[in-house]
Length: 106
Ligand SMILES: [Zn+2]
Image 1 (cartoon, rainbow, N blue to C red):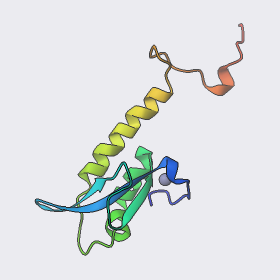
Image 2 (image 1 turned 90 degrees about the vertical axis):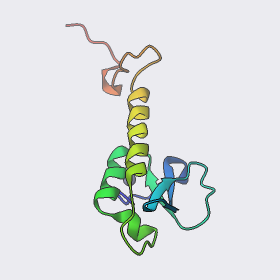
Image 3 (image 1 turned 45 degrees about the vertical axis):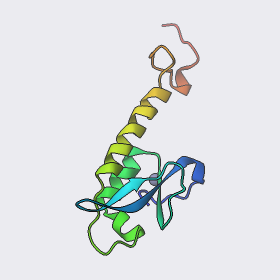
Image 4 (image 1 turned 90 degrees about the horizontal axis):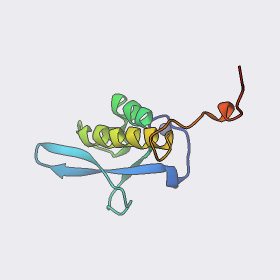
């Protein structure tokens, strides 16, 4: 929905439309259990940003008007944190990039 690349569901996050105070909001559905039409997105902040900018949620969720995407942005921010973590080891040191694993002495 963001970058439109197909992917297995395990790497995607589901969002649904919810009627809340102030109008319809796109809300995360981490368990993928909420009823209704769902919109799937890579767990990737870039992908989420694209979908928000393209107003892809309103289309994908068949909304009749504009929908709030604040929770999408907030959720994507947590994905950004997760991604940083996976690039660091337990002690917070950056993991070497794959091509740097072999040590070279100057
Ligand atoms: Zn994507």
